[in-house]
Length: 297
Image (tube, rainbow, N blue to C red; front, side):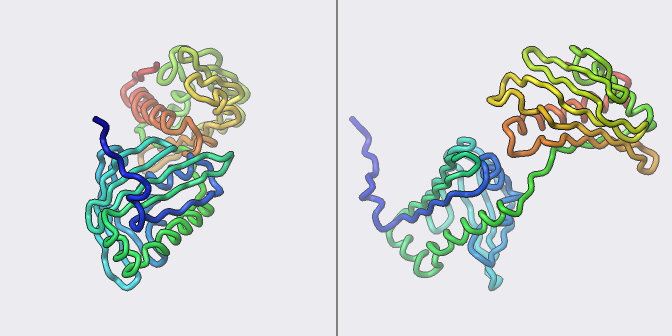
């Protein structure tokens, strides 16, 4: 026996929708929709601000926020994510009143993204109430416009990681150059002096660097000259990027700051590479500097 599905006729009088072609790649649109530190800045109609206490961005996850109206009124909201497909689709159910289900789809169109935002209310009465009382239809349009403005102003940040160690800057920079002791066992070349070239290999994946800048005990820059990242669609995504290491004395410790210029949240590699760099630097490199032994792959 076939289950009965709602037809489009069943939606009549209780739905609203808006579509917009956003001038941003889908990776960036997804980022500002999926992270509370971004969504709190653009969510809601004009004049509203937000406090997000929980946002478990996954299927079955809970989303709790309070929208603060321009007149000082607070509007608590609780939702549950029913479906989250990265870069494609978000479905959430608003479980506090009014009851509705929102579906947002993301369609890449070159370097732009077509977003379709659909809200289906539990009843015609609830739909009419939010439209007449709270002008939700205008609010949805304003919400999209605020998101669009936020995207236009937002500049994705390069990946950055830092550690503090009780060794001298000279020793710290020397250990960074001992790449085979904390990052890659399969290492060829040299990574200590200006114009040195070296390659790290992990199975099918390899990255070749050239040291393009070196200031003793203060700074070294690794320029990516070639790479093959086997698990990505763009297998040369790191080509042309730079890994910058800087050392500074803070109180009685040495702070090491690493910035991977070009590794931003909009690129395919970001999530995997962010986890990888954090693990290698905060784990393996830190242990090499503080305990004398790292854990290269």
